[in-house]
Image 1 (cartoon, rainbow, N blue to C red):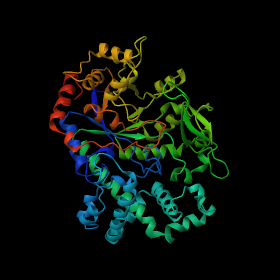
Image 2: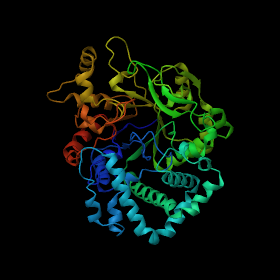
Image 3: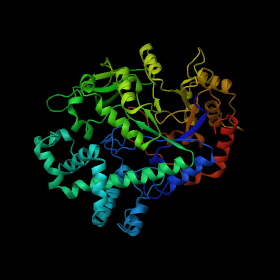
Image 4: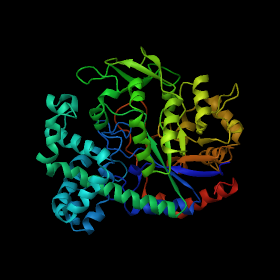
Length: 494
């Protein structure tokens, strides 16, 4: 039986620091020390992939490559590849409370390119070796980014025809003809992987495991789709025939139209599920535990005709079910996976969850229906589950308390004996998660800090003002760590 543990959800991008976005530098190590002092055993993060239009980590240019924004510049300064004066001149520190992605795109890539120019001769042997060791995913990524650069960053469906084919002679020639550009992207991944591996090893040495996050879908403009078009429902121009989303529900009257291409699961199965096995295998090189997003899509997924303005006129289509997970288990063995099983529920989804044995998720903000019983209420949490006060897609606890329907709020106060003056509503909700029977409880950093709407990470189905929140360095302190540790000891989670 799994031991009772707890953890904190904080995106790497939300860490404090002087370079415009959280990264793998000293503040990440300080946060690990904070988790250790707070007796936490897990640090849950959001996907680490390269963000593109909309800045969402769930719409990445690659399922495998890491985001160069997270490379800590101090190491490049110490190696002499760039100077501190160069970095300061870019004024990445202009807004420490929010990530300015537009500024990062211009400034951080400029600094990384300068570092590559100055350091590539010294690193050439190491870069070549790193490339050889990771060629199964790194070649397609570096080719994709190089050709994208040659086409002024256009989506790959708009490239010259010969480059839209991953297997064309012209595509293959790019690796040698544009070696300088090509190896810049190898350089970014060399530092990303090296810095992340050292950070993860440090966390593990402190008894802390990393929970990574794997989106079920890939982006339409991604190396994944470009290199594997036969695995998706595309037309002759490589455009999606149908796209992913979720149907209308209580929260969204027109559903959510994500726009990702959907898998041709027959083709994926015929290929031996190799794409998914590669994704899972590589994820477990980066993380200790893996949360798989939108897990119910493996049972049935909602597909919408491409070009639709919303997700209303879609249909449920059968997914791979246990065939996929049996294959993964055959190839990779037993894995520590958390299934994000939120959304439209059915007996078939419940059956898939039972067959995999993966723990599902319980969200406290969904629990307090004042009329009937509810699976999300703590007294109903089974051991093999993970309870959250809320996720990156939810309101913060403070915002939820401030805006919840009055009867829901009253029931939550009664059920958890919430009291705002002394304990604080936020701490009462966290207590509700920590005292749950679920083996793992997790709360957002924003909830420990009692932050409101302004610190929400993401509002689903919206563009703009998402994924930008950053924690203040002064808020990561020993006083807070000790309070979390006391709660964790009380409910035997640390």
